[in-house]
Image (cartoon, rainbow, N blue to C red; front, side, top):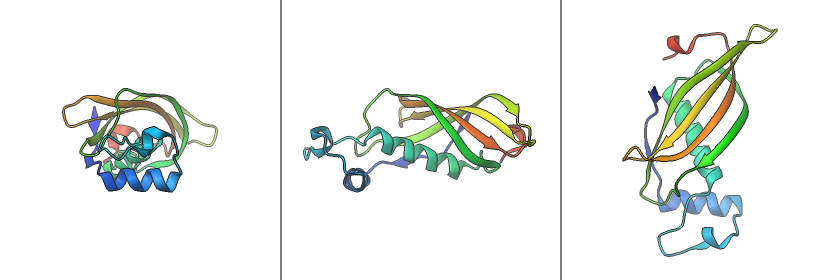
Length: 131
């Protein structure tokens, strides 16, 4: 299993994503410190953490996000990192590889925050050789 660096979600991160994204649901308008990060914001953080890890430096593009599930709300003060597990792959007619990955966002206590199945188009370099 591969793990990314961690990032702490701050109130400013949540404010920026909520205001920029235009979230109007009352859940995202709370001012009592319990304001959660929208799920789409968590996916955005997960993608950045995966890029920072270097595991997918041979990637060309994300092709699809499948079966995303959110297990817990993320609020300010939550530390997030991503565990990556490779799945099935197949070679395309152009010689590239379509590689399935499971991305699991976890908090500082190893609690699951979200899981997403992600399909990546990559240059044909086995994941074992990736940094």
